[in-house]
Image (cartoon, rainbow, N blue to C red; front, top):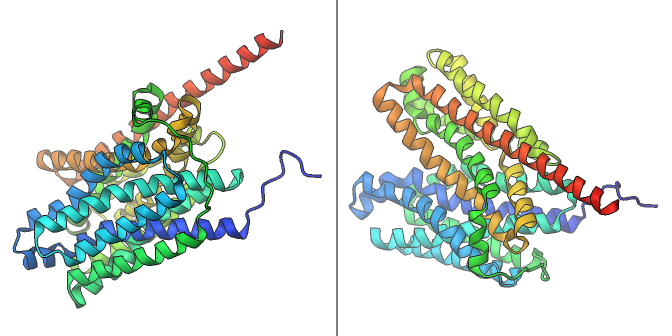
Length: 410
């Protein structure tokens, strides 16, 4: 006889769905980040400066961060199956438009469309994973879906860059178009037809951002990612000038960094679960120690590389926990805004990247690369402090609920 404590079965259909959602994030990650390796080719072909070409990266991030919450709030009232297929089709069409672009204006336009659609697709993918997967598998599966972005940096981006260098940069976007078509075909057959939809107005969903608990939780990943990107933004000069690594080996180090960051998603799956945010309090302290260690190891090649690889292992350790936590808070305070809440983690991460890059730029201008370490560590400690506060508020809520129930029983 099955009891309430018996783990739910993880069916083959659910496993295939998890693979499909991970493939989708892999495709979106490849489409987003591959432009980084092709900026020189795009700059020369479109006759624009490298600085202008760089806006194809920053423009994508800004459009993602700003457009995702609003579009998610607007479209989440619609049935998810046809909505997912429509958005994947628009994403694929955006890549076709990028491949056909003969001007900067058309290319940045296609990137903005792709960015906003990608953000909503990520939000819906996380929501579907939360709704469909067994309770004991939600954390690891959400971490796996997030891992699609990490794997894209290790496999998709180098492959796409190679295609662009052997052929031309447009050919790379035909490659991402093909990946989009494959994702669409798989989604047609694999995505569940009857997914739960809770209708709510865009105003009601956006109102979730006024909830202090949501704001508090939102900034936990923001400061954690900012801590890493304060350093990672300047990883090339750190490797070359600080650790004395020859330029020809930098790409190999970055590849190793990407490979280690995959382990971060495995760690994220282990952390997620009951009282995940409580665990993050200490995870961020470990992250802070690792970031601070670079202050002492930056002048030594081997020790410096160890610090960087440990930094990679910690970078995404909070993703699955924060994703589940935001959706759980939405379930408590505004159940109709759960899909909207699922869009907030990627937005927080993009804001964290921008914050980290800005802080890093200021530090480098004022004091040099060595001081990036302790500034990054301070950001991680801020994330830990916010996680401590969230945990304390959760326990206070649990205590109040328990007292209220006891009062009803008397």
